[in-house]
Image (cartoon, rainbow, N blue to C red; front, top):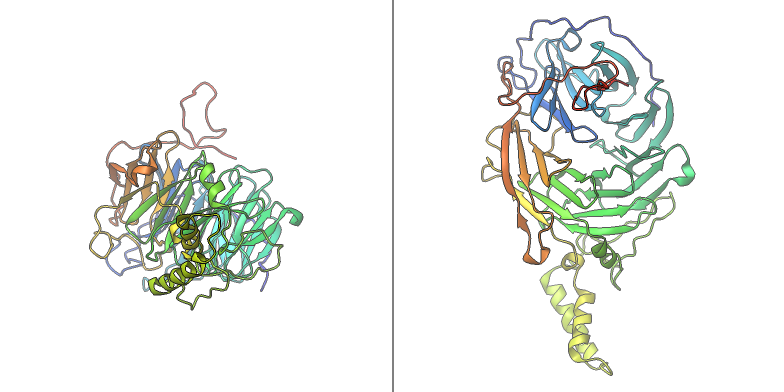
Length: 492
């Protein structure tokens, strides 16, 4: 694995003067439309940012309003923003830009570097380079992580000095998450062995460890703000897991569905009581993380593989995702009804002759629990809802993604104070749904109530968000001391 070059801070001689919009569509070859390439919420879910085939845009969540549009600047002339992330509500954005050739096609010339945009000066303030394509970027107030397919490089955000080089398994999705409010910083990423998760606690390797999470490659990762919980999903996307970060102990197994799907987002609510999940499916799920349920779910049965945090050396994979039984292999069909029925019949016949002090009903019940897969013990979703405006194949009526887009599916964000979930969709719509946090799970899974849908993006370059917009100026020093209700953008 080749090391990244030392980062260099570079200014940009091009200022923020407007330039004519390119007449060629860089993604779909029609007119001068603008398409989505990436999007995501900031660390406190108060804003979201999107990278486009012409630059980037920034929005507030409540109310939904466009704050900045940087698409007709000299710095972004003939460039697309393939990846972008923002730092809370500051003027700093880390992005990967790619150049558009004269034929209108995007080229990967800039895909091996991360550029840091300072929106106060309207220039790129720094640059991180690698010999390999950048797959992801993660930010917090003290560090920035540049994610390549087989390595992650961690830099101090102030001086852009490399402080950590982590080797991972194949990570084409660019998975890497940072705890936004931990001290010291905590990073979670794929380990070197398939299905493992590495936890890096600051620069002290003694507090870092690796644990086995899934038997197949990871597809999604999330951490709560404090870094005490880690949520993960594998490529199958049927089972989600929540682990205790300190030792890798499994706390919850969450059953999304029996049908595989590509997970696009996992997000904890601020109080860590709920976890929301979005995928390539049209259904969004909300799980309730009840500590009493975790204690019960954490007790390993006689047929399940114990979940312990192994040392940083790669751990051996366990059984199949839907039935993590000892001796099971991915090729075995141990969960088929025929195999389960035969196993139950055999065990019951054997158990009937062993009844001494227990009733027959108790013995049969224990036998059935021992041979049934974990499918029946997984926690089901607390609430869910179907995204509207989808066809029979689960595709939206409008798809605003460009050909170079890294967008898999929707992104989610919990409201700060209300029991409400925002769904950022590549159709250009932002949906809002409400749920009852006190709903009795014994009644089944609740249907969330639809609250609103706002069109925040369209491919027309002259599109403007309708409804209550938010004009948020960028000012030095942030919120004025004499205005408690001000929402100005902060500067580091």
